[in-house]
Length: 124
Image (cartoon, rainbow, N blue to C red; front, side, top):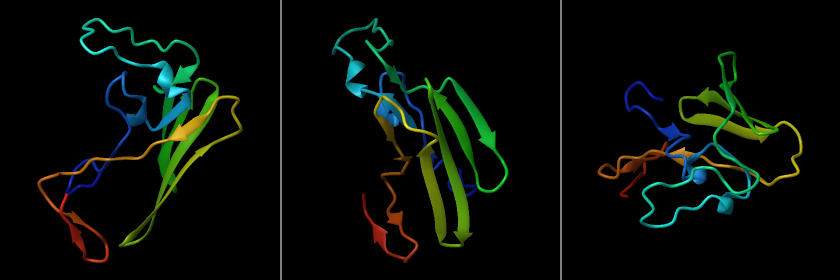
């Protein structure tokens, strides 16, 4: 979150979109929606974790989140290096028997150009 622009990075949307979660542990194809189904079953058919069972805000530098997805402990850390550099680290504490994917969702205003630290602007 940025005071002037609002939310820049997100990690949640709906239960039917694991790719919008910060992490996906397991096979994301196990959760699918049948078009037109107005009473979907939100439970994946097998081992898939995309909604954290616990989340802890880390306020000491580097700031971030500790997230638990099933048996996988994952984390996000952010460190401001200088006025134009932000280091981001997305990691899992130890190896998992299930595939683990990290997702970083940028929330952009499509009506405005994307402004880079170099001064370059990109129309979306």
